[in-house]
Image (cartoon, rainbow, N blue to C red; front, side, top):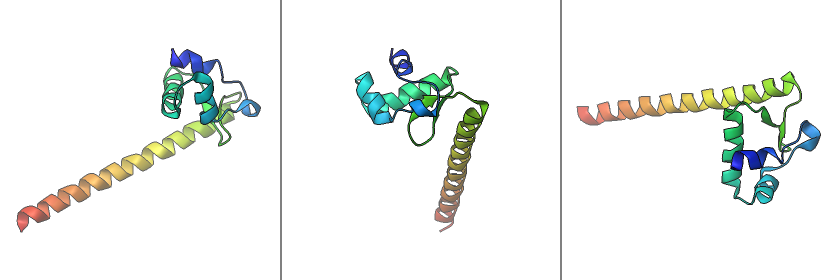
Length: 99
């Protein structure tokens, strides 16, 4: 239900960008639920992008590429943090055992 509800408020192109706060208000939900609705739309293949001004449906391949690059960067950054955390934890546990 939220997915369809969010989609009805998204327009095509940067000029129709809508902030998450406004989207949540229009949907009658909190911002977290609105963000989850956007995630679900993306998971279903909708080209929802965010240029800092708000969410909108991409009109061009360039808009999709920019959004995907942001997502890749975020994913790789998070993966790097997870790897370091695991390595440091394993090193800490090894040091703790050796004491």
